[in-house]
Image: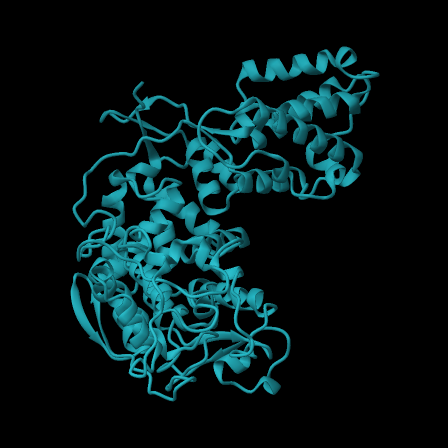
Length: 554
């Protein structure tokens, strides 16, 4: 059994084949995603010296120095020249890339008066030593996300003292450029070190206030702490859950938090470059309304929907599946059955028919991304709902499954019937007929470009959207997409999967079993109702694993 939805070969023109397996139990537990609702109390062991990701590096350079593009390298983002994100030791090539980028940034900053003021808060006079010493203290505090130690200050002062030997003329601005370069290649800048060894009395280390501040800022903003957070850290005011919560709630009012929430939902939706979302192709003889210029518009609408629910509405997980709000322009209006003459080129907020269009899964972005070249794809849509929404892993398709042809026949007058017959083989039926196909069949109410349909375009046969969908371990008779969305919104498994995705994303570790108690706690709060997505985000800062770290054994 398995997911064709993960196979790159299915992204272009052509059909989709069945997934399959040798039994009727999918790769993950159908009753409880991610290993069940049982949890083991503990603290996940994570790297004490995690490097900045490339995205974090770019945002950190932006907020420290105002640099967003390298003028010496075709105005690309700084991280474009770095090695791809990876764990483990830094290679010689990776280290060389950091040095090259740092050299370009330092030169660019010192050549631009506006950027230079972000580094130097004073004007060097004489040999510049006094001003550069102050810069070491002030800039170093922000770059390292903590005050420098006396030994570090001494080492940077020594660089200034050696200025005449390490620069062409020893002029203060040349020395300043060398100083900035040294900061940018320092491990304390490139890495997010957590090395405090204050015991909590239970075999773990309590993070320092500066380490907590760094965790907060990189989790919620993907960048360095701001002045208020730095001040709280300097004053030791990040040692209790209440203090941390207050800062987290404040930080969600910053636009950078919206960017982080948007990035999470791209992760949740598998939306981005080189995904189904940006690679859709359609047979325009069958779907003349389709144009690839619609793809970025549909993706933007999806992102606007999540932002609206989370921030404008202060909404809950349930509203992600139930809200009829959409963002439409003249190009996408026909896909929703709306008059394009009533819209311009900008996306406009509208309220759709809640009986046809509740939630993000009924928006044209998802429906186009999870369709085939010349027809809908119950398999692709069903796999996403089964795996990514409900947390049931269908596993890997058996050999040859993807090449199974779509059968023809006079009695196969709907796409549903053809797919049902295609997946009827013994190696496929267990997963497909129990888990994957049913939610996909419910979504047959939308054609391959996301328009509402009640009859098959090619045959005129009525669309049947009734199916027994496996939700929370039991088959549930579902009559329509709106019915399915209501069931998903109320599903403890779907709620737990969403919480699990948030924990993995925020803590930067994928599905660690020792995070399961945190996942369970968040999921229970979602189930209780009235628990906003923003409540969930701030509560991610309240778990013991956010304030402490495990003692890493050799």
